[in-house]
Amino acid sequence: MYEGVRAPAVFNPETILEALDVYQRYPRSILWAGGTTLMSQLREYPSHDNKDILYLGGVSELHRINRNERYIEVGPMVSIQRLLTVGQHILHPVLAHACKRLGPPIIRSQATIGGSLCHPNLRLNLATALMILETQVEIKDSRSTKSSTRWVPIHRLYKRDGSLGLIHGEIITRLRVFFEDANFQCFSIIGDPFYHPETAVIFAVFAKYEKSTISEFRFSLSLPSIDIFRSKEIEASITSKDLPLSAKEIIAISGQLRELLSNYSSKIQKVQIERSCRILEKTLQDMNTKVFAN
Image (tube, rainbow, N blue to C red):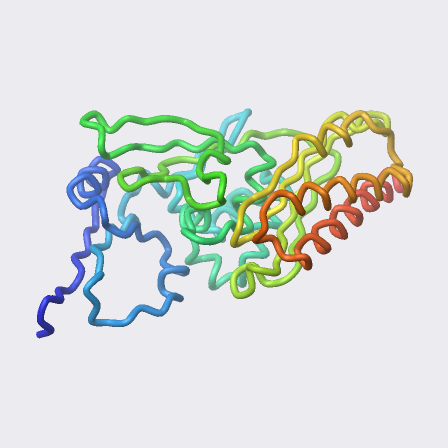
């Protein structure tokens, strides 16, 4: 035995109420979903900070997928691969592409939605795509005697500095993604968000246009180790423009993004700014191409 060191306890609740009860009594426990991120981290054993583990895999409510005419609701323990399989005909293309880019099927079958969204240090594919789909998230708080529940927009999961906004005692229990038509959707990654987040960029767009006039344009830009950036200013400047956009308009919009990113955070690398501007320019050019094709 190692003096002053104990093995972590592993709790395996079968209901949400049991999970909340354990989390209330052991608020410093590590929430364990698919484990793909946690298992990839180097942890020495024995260690004095061996935290207890609250495994959520046995909570059947967190594995559910339900849908109606307006939206699909997904539990955080649903694997990425299962979401792709069940929702292959109904998922927004931008969300489906984000899921597929998370890794090969063997990884996607283990990785969960909740685990991807709640990575403590990185903002990855799913968060970037779900941000522009204006997804709603249900959060339960174990600290309340009645286990209070609230729905929040997904951007409220993260603080201004990009860190995870959930506090100890809170658990994501459902995500609600609304069905919505769009004329143009895209998802792109430049670099490696997991191994080289300091230079990588993740980009997602959801746009509508009527008779070549843009009626709505949403985009989210993830700088994985910093934050998910979304500019209402740029979105508004693109909305109401006519397609195809001129080269002058595209350059002006790209310059607007460059200026905003340069002033957003000193942590953003120049290569990320350059990549972000180039990918926005390409996206707008792709929208032009689609209009010409139709």
